[in-house]
Image (cartoon, rainbow, N blue to C red):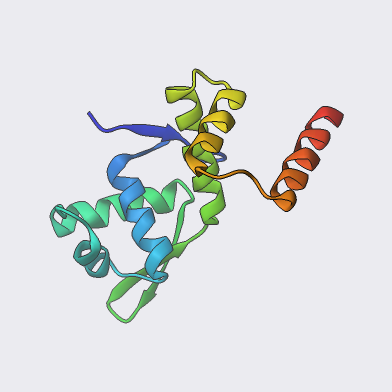
Length: 132
């Protein structure tokens, strides 16, 4: 079964394969279905790629326009939207929904102390959150 994650402002979830397609689009920019196929690990059939791209258009993740005989796709949403959704899923799945545990885990990964600028940024974010 495909792992999925919820996305903001769309009508569903992105499957693992849909996320892979979006990764290609974010990395390459404007792409055709053939280009997406060439960039995917264990790429499915061309018709499957076209179907998935169409689904991503309907979900609002991609825009498509015809250039000659080919459809060319580009991202309709910023990568930050996808990143935020993926991060939300990681927090829910691995940190039992606790932002504090997730931040603690991220800080443990750093392997070095935060510099003064990073501490100030985190303090500002915490102060902003307290206001809300």
